[in-house]
Image (cartoon, rainbow, N blue to C red; front, side):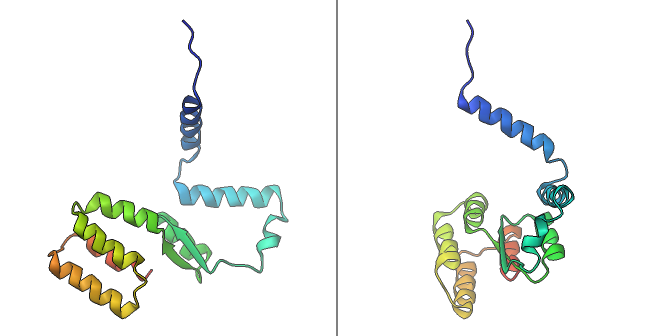
Length: 141
């Protein structure tokens, strides 16, 4: 019996093929792609020559941060809140802490109120650990 393939099979195959192309990591692949575009079409970057991004949002990949710092040193590197919240759910196994963390991220707090709420969360739940400390350090990047 011959069975055809589904759209999910096609998606999985395309994803597999794309991953083979991304050999050096996302940041290096993006830079390589842009360099290839510039070679193929010398006018490509002319439309961007006077414009530089004010902010760039990523998932927090360290290689991407390095590339952004190198290519756009004046741009503010921001972390994607969807990725932050996915990571807090993975790294903190307590719904109350996740809720408090979410308030720190989405609560629209002033810098002073953020620092107070963050410290209160750390003290209340006796939070110590590499992930929480890393996220606190990343807030200023």
